[in-house]
Amino acid sequence: MLDPWEIRAARNAASDLAGGRVVVVTGGARRGGIGRAVADAFLRLGDAVVLSDIGTALPSHPDYPVASSDSLADGATDLRALGELITAACDVTDEAQVVRLFDIAEAAYGGVDVLVNCAGLAIGLTPVTQLALADWQVNLDVMATGAFLCAREAARRMEADGRGGRIITIASQAGKTGMPHLAAYCAAKFAVIGLTQSMAAELGEKGITVNAICPGTVDTPLLEVEGGVYEVFARAAGRTKDDYRRRLERRIPMRRLGRPDDIAAAAVYLASAAASFVTGEALNVTGGEEMH
Ligand code: NAD
Image (tube, rainbow, N blue to C red):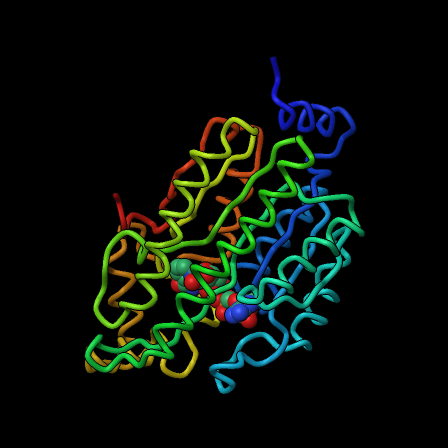
């Protein structure tokens, strides 16, 4: 017997639509970011996308360059030509805003079939002995609690709908192996993988799969922020950014950094009927840099 997801996929295939699903993407506004690429990929498949991002400064770290409301508007302009899309500002750390995001998806498109949690940041890249509590906390708030709040809300609605669904969170290779200067980021990403496994165990019988994607180093604006990967790691290695980047590429078996499209392709796979028996996974997309 086909599960509801397979019936939906078969129906969509028969109607010439590869997609036809409703996909909610968090942290998706920034040009060049993973979320934007994820939205682009699902739109090209014929899915409807709710593109969301914080759209206003982080209360605890107002100087950190999160996506502004202009980036959300710019994302809409860029992507709307590809298909059915609406935007919604949502701070994933705020429970009421998360509920509202899914209300918006429901009002516009009748529910949610796929959630892709992309919201994230690079703050507090420093040895633990110098790590401020506020910097530790914002990592956990945005990338662990934020993923939890969105996944919980998506799961509630998918369960109520009874037609299955897909919950995907962008974790990291830093969710599998601890790294210097990244304790807060690693802790948040390890948490996401635990959340993914527990939710997968609970929701399988409802036809809902829950998976994480673990990118390696992906060429996005996240690497460029002040106090981010390039600045901190290049400085620690006593190298220029370009030199550091070249050394990094040589260390990766595929000899290049990841691209946002590589991660979007993994999300498309995990949301597809082909992955209907894949759940609780933390899929490396690292060019071979991480293998366990
Ligand atoms: P990005 O900065 O382009 O995207 C992150 C987005 O999250 C931004 O648009 C930002 O505005 C948004 N955001 C931050 N706080 C938020 C909040 N409270 N509520 C809603 N949105 C918020 O960076 P990216 O590289 O595309 O990162 C996307 C995801 O991929 C992140 O979770 C990141 O940790 C993860 N990741 C990135 C890399 C990499 O090398 N770039 C590697 C592994 C994992």
